[in-house]
Image (tube, rainbow, N blue to C red; front, side):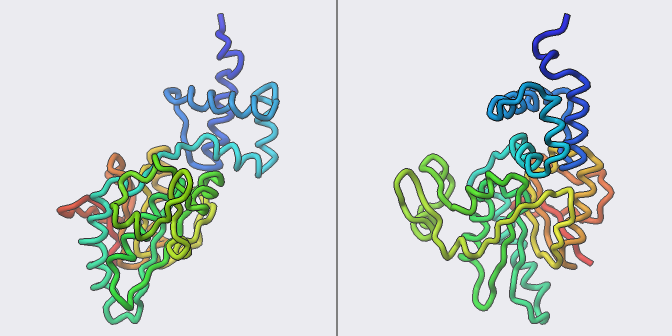
Length: 275
């Protein structure tokens, strides 16, 4: 006897949805996280007054904007300021000095950074604060921050964070780079101006080239091996000849067909492209 859940979302429905999601984003749903997809679908159908998952599947198969909205709904957006502090210590004490040496004599004094899968903006704002503090004149930086979630990007662009979300920010940084407003804190406009937020699906080529640092943390964990390899190789193509890649502490390129070199510093592990 089938349960009500089976009636709502059959095995055939699950296969159709997970295939569409994978083809469009690289995100891979397994049987173990099927319940997450099912709960998000129930929420979406209720909000849009749609009766069946089959009807909604027909809609997202044809309507690209609705598909974007759906992909936004199913992504997990867990982040915070200075998440995994060791990465930022490695950026300050190892990566930036290495980039100074690599760029010496090149005439370039700009550090180009991509925060891929930036969620609600805490990561790129953290990077921007840190680089503002540590880069001496005439060095400057550019940050591209992207995500597949339009809702998250709107939050990031607004730069407002409630009192409960500013944990981890050193008090000196909070005073220097934020204004206290009703209900929370607002990022200063000059810091916001140093970051370009943009929608991007990591399944596609970003068109970026010559990047010095890429942060893509806790993102590829949601992809299968084939999609992971494709994303990592696209990062390689987007990065300069001497550059660095940060991925999540629970993620690894071990066994993956990639040219990146593993680097272990006294602060954190990361990967580098040196050609």
